[in-house]
Amino acid sequence: MPERFVFSGLRELFAKANEEKSGDQLAGIAAASERERVAAKRQLADLPLDEIVRQPLIDPDDDDVSRLILESFDQQAFAPLKSMTVGEFREYLMEDSTGEAELRKIQRAIIPEIAAAVAKIMSNKDLVIAAAKIRNVTRCRNTMGQPGVLGIRIQPNHPVDDVGSILLAGLEGLFYGCGDAVIGVNPAADSVETVSAILQALDRLITACKAPTQSCCLAHISTQLAALGRGAPVDLLFQSVAGTEAANRSFGITLAMLREGREQVIAHHGKRKDVAWKGTNVMYFETGQGSALSAEAHCGVDQLTLEARAYGVARAFDPFLVNSVVGFIGPEYLFNERQIIRAGLEDHFMGKLLGLPMGCDVCYTNHAEADQNSVDNLLLLLGAAGCNYFMGVPCGDDVMLNYQSTSYHDAIGVRRIFKLRPAPEFLAWLEETGIYRDGEPAKFDASVRRLLMQGLESSLEGIA
Image (cartoon, rainbow, N blue to C red; front, side, top):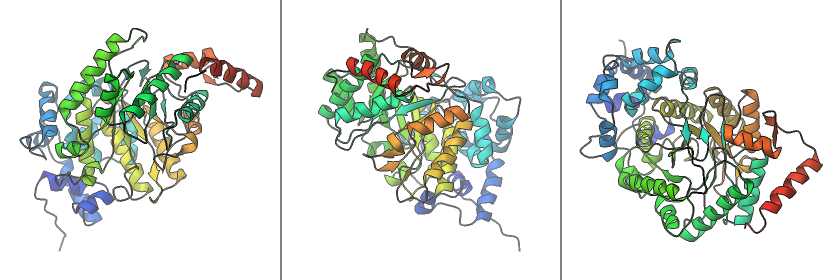
């Protein structure tokens, strides 16, 4: 007798069609076999897009993320797509005739669940090819996301928030040509005093070096706004976000808080006449598959779909940067290299398709079935997919968060392999300082390096 599979509704169909993830298995919603997974994928491929819109996976009456998604949905732009099936939509994305202009027109017509559905039936190669077609450009102190550009976030974390050590690690990153995305510090202590000190120091570093980039202290949004109220400069307002109201509540946030915070920072920028702002993208969001499940707030929805819904939240606030911290939550949610790589490609594709400036923290925790070769593999795949930016962590080892990520050296390697360059304003600064020559890292000797250090050190006297 042939084996038959019946799925009770869209929520179960979405979950069973997902690639193998330890988080879905932990939640008890994963396919029980590869046969069941393939059956779910086939049924999902035949599902009309309009049916996904008409049957929310989480009731909007009970969830403000669902309400936000439907309220911000461009129904007029969706009209030409509504009769397509998920499979037909995949074919449309993969067509050679479908380019960036066509995809840009439909970004607001796609709800996150549609992005999740099509990702589930795409191969890794499909995810790379489709994402590479899309460039989402944003502006704050500089401009990020153009074709041929790869940004790097300098991540100079310190286990006791020693400001001098943070600045030294940040300065090292600048010497490698990193930092155009942001110089962003995860504080060990989420206190107003610590966050204020870090923000003030990073701003003095950027000002002294005259580097066209932005800073951020990745504390809770309420702590950052309290520091802003005490006079600390805020370039980018950070917050981790998730795909359900309950999961965001577990982070201590609401959509109203994000909205009010964004308005405060835009007003703050208007008063800072010493900075030539390029635009009003002032938010920085981080996400990751499994965050809602870890908060027991997944509502029976699979982690890939919830990640897409987190991007629906991010999109509403016109962020400068978004990144999936793909392997950070741990093997309970993404068990090994295969699952981490798949999730990273899914996240990047879905975010780009929805119009977001997607980066990725290509990383893993020390108890996951992964290593630095795993990082290299995903880093190169995402480089080919047109990822906006990666992390630059000293030696790839975050001594505060205790996980493994990508280093300054990795950033240079990816730029060289794919012939990519830093953000244009930042590249001009690198050329002026002698850190870059003719668009490439300068091969200067020790004496030239000493001269550069002396010049910068004289500018930074008393900074810490």
